Length: 334
Image (cartoon, rainbow, N blue to C red; front, top):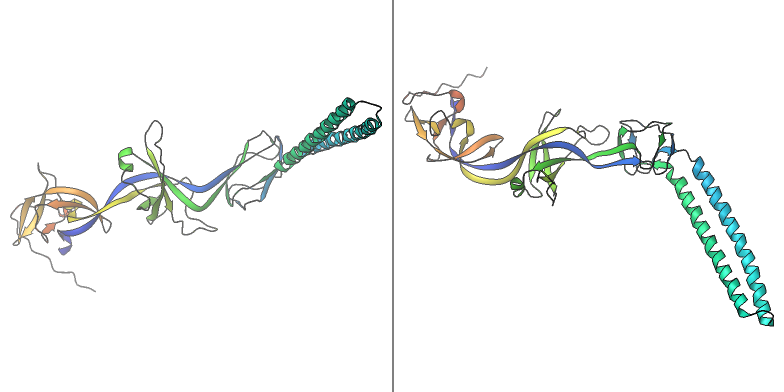
């Protein structure tokens, strides 16, 4: 049939690099406890939506409240010491003016006044620190997104920096691909790739947006980050963090005389193709070159073939050289 043959002709080959990796949200954050205490008012669960600045949980503020009261009492006590030192300084200044005491006593009372003022300022700073601890007992989401993990439960006593929630923003998803040092040389920002993602029927387009300037320790691999267009977005995104993706990254384009890769046969010592010449099958050795894709089909560049040569596809199988070829008529359309 006419569909069993293909023409050798000039085509633009898209050379690609096989990549794979897991999808990651470009923006994600762990919400951690900043002060120790009992976790309270944690109501959100995995899959719930949160907004930036939204209160998601609290740590028991009792200790922070009492620390504020303690610091405030110390500040009040320091303030009273300022009043005492100020009165003593004023009295000594009057006595010095009248000549009853020496100037040394005035200098001593001045130093005591300055010390009391410094103590009061330190006590006020302690009050502000205690208020900051009280504010830190309220846990807020730093970004808008969905809760991916709930790592603590209400009623638990959490320590400082204990992870409570993980929030991910699925509006921007990236593929983190690991490349060998030699392959990374040909990868540039702006190159595109077609990815096959598990659970998604159609190929998904992605674009290289960043390349890590440093190689990974040990493996010496280089990480490239490809932004994926999550078209669904919004309330029901189709792509999830952690899904596995693989595909081909287009690194270059080249024009060459090409054939489908399956049309080049390798059951002889040298590669060859089956041509149709003058109505008969002819076996012709070829030299293969670069490989790539054209219109989604794997292609290979070939030499020693005329442009426009009719080549039998690999799906037909091996035909004896010299076999007569006759094309079948097109099927009638009902």
